[in-house]
Length: 281
Image 1 (tube, rainbow, N blue to C red):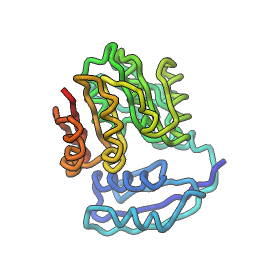
Image 2 (cartoon, rainbow, N blue to C red):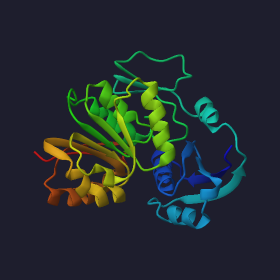
Image 3 (cartoon, rainbow, N blue to C red):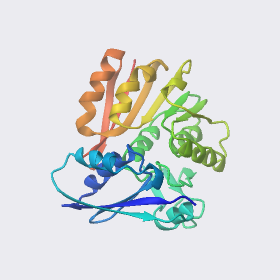
């Protein structure tokens, strides 16, 4: 069993947006799971990966003016998957059409699209605003027979939904090996073995084509890799981007415009998180 470092962050005043943004900053330095509450959040990282200096740097990037109290403790190894499922992951319905739940859940609302996800502490259960924002977009698009690439696929949830809606081929690319193996399990769990999963970064996009390209990562990765993303797009393709804040939309557009991409629309959740829809049409 792996040992973990638990970091407790008390935020004052505490809001849902504040805990979401803090979680995103910590995810960028290797933290794997987050448990928010009314006072702040608990964040977990594998003990060998814990870096106090990186933690302090991430906290320094926090954009809100508020008091932040930090405490850390080592947590002895246990069955983390069972711990996560039993205590933190609850079923969620997105857009009244898609329900996401774990394999152990029994009281599940009936929806058009039923996705089973056993997250194993990987990102992407549908609860985070950026994931649900993209799910909402995928539910509005015609995906039948369309080639879809899900960059930074995480648990594979977005690739699975695309396949359920008739997209083909569907490719999920994930740089983190732990998340990649989790995506393999989840794809099999939902009976969509046709989804191609790749453990790599944007270099794996060479030679690939997409009618719909999805990236739910963060602003810096997206803007750096946007040329590689754009190179995959077929004429009239759609690109759905999230993982950044509403204030970052102009930054992303500044990187996208020289590549022949322009905005179709954008949506927001929690007054902070954004989803940007682009096209090359």
